[in-house]
Length: 327
Image (cartoon, rainbow, N blue to C red; front, side):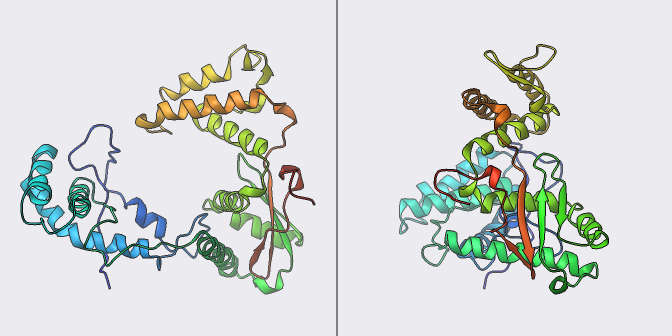
């Protein structure tokens, strides 16, 4: 059994273009597999997965050498040269394939420079790494979200088995959750609980991801455009009018120009991703220009909850695909 190390992500050598938090952060893979039971988490990965166990093994393998390397090598170039000699050019690991030597080189390098690594071709692992199937992941994720909602309600003194059938409706841009099917007093309590601690936001993303194949592409395109525009500019794209020249507001400002200008100064998107963000947003607007933007429904999500389980059968028909689904 691998022993989990209390490692942290950090750009130790201040590599240009790499994310540099002010203080060490929990590595992304640990956040991904974090088990949560007292708040809603949209995407729950099973810590029994072979991928999680492989990450723990690699962390255990390279943690102490990474600490030693940072004390010994004062810059990234010296570190790369030393590890290259160790794994790629010297004789110490000549009995391993190049792919394996390359994996060991990258894992010790990344563990030293950033406090995290993940090349699964490493021979320290016991054979091929197997993750959960899509079906297994979906089942585990839904089970965890059900548990999280039930725990939130139970901790507030509500007996989930006695609440009966209810429907959650979540507004897509402020993520305000409304409850239907309960008396006013209980409804108010449940709404207060699920609209706190980002629970409604996480539940929105869980429902959206779980039902992606059922959501009309135009509805998704509209949601993404409005969401991205608000994140960068703070404005609502729905206040802009669709014209032959693009989306224009009452002052004559073009939404694409407003987005581009705001993108230059926003902190919501890291600098290295701003170019890609602009390409995605402009492409999305171009797609929407070929449609009647105002007639596309907003992605208000609805899902049922009964006996401690979410019920996908309760879903907003306005946003569903029309060709293959009959409701």
